[in-house]
Amino acid sequence: MTPAPWWTSAVVYQIYPRSFQDSDGDGVGDLGGILQRLDHLSDLGVDVVWLSPVYPSPQADNGYDISDYQDVDPLFGTLEQLDELIAALHSRGMKLVLDLVVNHTSDEHPWFVESRSSPSSAKRDWYWWRPPRDGGAPTNWASFFSGPVWELDEASGEYYLHLFEKKQPDLNWENPQVRQAVYAMMRWWLDRGVDGFRMDVINMISKDVGPDGALHDGPPIPGTLLGDGSASYLCGPRIHEFLQEMHREVFAGRDAALLTVGEMPGVTLEEAQLFTDPARGEVDMVFQFEHVGLDHGATKWDLRPLRWRDLKASFGRWQAGLAKVGWNSLYWDNHDQPRAVSRYGDDSPEHRRASATCLATLLHLHRGTPYVYQGEELGMANYPFAGIEDFQDVESLNQYAAAVAGGADPGVVLRGLRKMSRDNARTPVQWDGSPTAGFTTGTPWLPVNPDHVEWNAARQRDDDTSVLAHYRRLIALRHQLPVVALGDFTMLLPEVDDVYAFTRSLDGETLLVVCNVSSRPCAVGELLPDAVGAELLLGNLKVEDPTVLAPWEARVLRL
Ligand code: ISL
Image (cartoon, protein in one colour):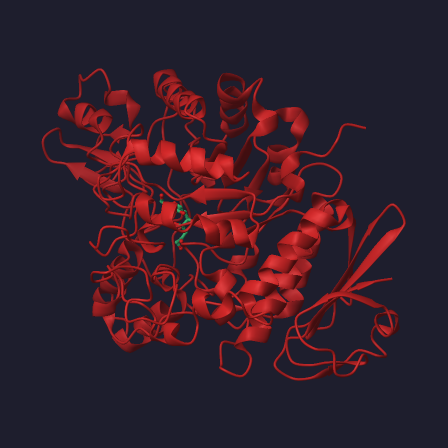
């Protein structure tokens, strides 16, 4: 049997550089700041750092709008500092994965500037240009960031496609020159020492063009004049071909040492099986979005309470579906999602520590590669936003403007933003209890959460009962026990809402994981008799009664 790939026992830590650590007092995190905080990562024990974009960018979407793929934005530092970071991580036994954003560029990228310059430009076809249809947009598709996906270029009278912000025009992957330019750039980074890529919305690069090159309307979205174009761009007809080509051109021969993860909104389990089947040579794993959609209503701003039964059904299906072939990535949150403890746990003072550590235990004991988003290991929570002036994210601001213009009650719109805005995840990391939380000597670009006085790394570092200490233990457990990395997964009690329980088994060893995912005590003596009296490998609370789980208590038991 070939040995399991190294990333099956690895844990990845995501750094959103703008909010991690500032080193020059401008209030924005930077590479110098990351270099100062490497001990935090070593102490935690993570294997890989995924760094969100640090490339030159107008920052319309905080760096996910790139104007030069092969440099570092002065806001974040220099290319030399990135080299230094690669070397420093390597010398501590960690790897660095960069964010690869190639569904779109910035409208200020030289490729787009040239493409826009004239319909006869050599790069015109590098992006999606279309003439007007009936004097308006070429299709009815809605953008992810409100409004239409088409922007009129007055000079040529043609529209260009942008699935995200209008400053993020989509690259045309049908054009082989585009693909070769991207692959060359990726090889350049690998040659510099990076260890792989997290590929932004990579399942959107193939658009469904018919034989005539036409893009088609999607079904109307109720209450708007726009349509849902996702059937034309999610996992489009050539997506597997493109990823296989990328694999051949970029990763072949060196992929054993690398990690590749495709961010894939809307990906189905069936597609994910294909993407992550090693025999097909596409990506190692994908970020799927099923579980982060369970509390959405018609849109992510319409709140709906989460039912744990649904979450279990979803995670259970993905565990089973990628058991034989493929691999899961495991995450609660990232820079696009609200804070996990506020969303899935209970961030009230009474339950915050227990629920943060319970959620961590649950996730890290699944089969797959866990991702820790900066601050999650400290139990950081959502920010108490007062009004719209507190938000900075383009998605939130566009949503507010569009909804209010459409007649929605601003108070209701704000309620949605408070819960779901991406800015919740983007407040500075809480290093200590000082006024700017040790993040900067200047004014932070987004305010520090006032709860940092209590919830910060300095307070938790030497406290054995802290969230941070618990993450350290979970990460160590994955490194120590093959059953955590590779064991078979079996979901238990699928119909029960308050108890999330499952087993992991490998070579005759079985772990039973039992979590109370509610803020009430829960008797488990009858539900799970095996749990009573079994050896406790790791728990998040002091066990008071083996037959009763305290609110948000989690136990990892050996049967
Ligand atoms: O957060 C979202 C909006 O609800 C998601 O739809 C998000 O836009 C989607 O997950 C894609 O995210 C990635 O690409 C975006 C960028 O804004 C996100 O930060 C990035 O993670 C465009 O590059």
